[in-house]
Structures are given as structure tokens and as C-alpha cells.
Image (tube, rainbow over all chains, first blue to last red; front, side, top):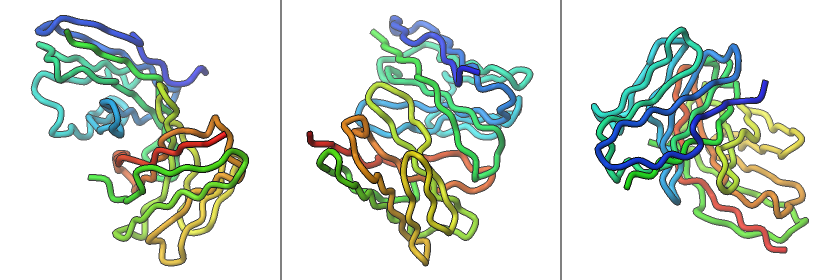
Length: 115
Length: 109
């Protein structure tokens, strides 16, 4: 297993376009998280899944954002009608369970630039 | 919101020990204390975690105060590769992982 994989690594899009990011977690990891990180800040929580169920969405996640995890495997994060303020690094993480004594593994992220 | 408080930045000399403090005065009995670090241009990586007792692993040691309201991450011999942002996080069952601003550690050669 090569760890958490995110695709693409970089994305440049024009304002108003839709973009979709993919995250492939470590096999058999039940929990999957999405974060957004801007320069100089810590990762901000966006949403998380337990298998295919979306447990919570941050208030940061406007109606333009949607995330799915069909069949409890890979996940996608879609941003509709992108705005310049959406420019950030989008990070995905997975963990084997919801137990608090387990570690989360992070991907390298997708860097989005909206021009 | 993050439930921990950390200094914004710290400096240390290469090959010397580093003690990174974290305050978590509102910690509950079931919260685990986790540390992650983020190297430049990379995603965060797990460092260590503990509940009540001090913990050691190949990367670092975690010293937890007796009242659990503070903890210290110890890097025994810092190298230039340890320059990163270090995050102290409290985790409870079913809880999402919430990051604060972390401590930016600078290592001086």
C-alpha cells in the first residue's frame, strides 16, 4: 500500500469553473477526512466520512462544495463555480477506525489555483 | 475550534534536544493527545500520541503532565529535517481532527 493518494496534485482553473478532486485512502481505512489549508494556516476541517456515510460538514463548506464517498472507498470533493477565495491546498486523510487512539495518514494534497 | 494552545514559533540548534509545549486545560478524561508535524510542501504526518503515561517512539517522546492539562513533545536530537510546523491535537472517539496554528520549529545549523 502506497498510502493516501490524491489526484491531481495541482489544478489551475478559471473562476466560475467546476473542479473535482479525488482521494484514495489506505485500503480498509473506514474513516476519511477532507481539509483545506491556506498559506501560513493550519489545515481547516471540511468534512469527514465513516465508510460511505458523511458524518459532518463544516460551516466552511458552502453549498458550492460537495463531497462523496460511494461504496466507502475513494472519495471526491467537488467545488462548483469556483471563486478566487477557493485557492488553497486541499488535503485528504484516512484512518483505520474512529477510535481516538489511531493515527491518521495524510495525502500530499491537491493545490488549487483559481485565476 | 482547536482545544490546545502552542507557541507560534521556536528555535533550536541542530543536534540539541527540543521541547515543544502544548497547553490543553479543558482536556476531558477520554481525550487522547496527538502530535502531527507538517514539513514544507507536504501533508501532515503523525508523530506520537498518548493518554496518560509518557510515550516514546522512534521519532519522539511525549511527556504528559500528571493533571493532563499540558504536554511536551521532545525531539531528542534535532536535525535540519525536523524543521516543520508541529501540531498538538486532542482527539476523542468519533471526533474529527481539529488543527490549531501549531508551532513553527526552526533548526539552526
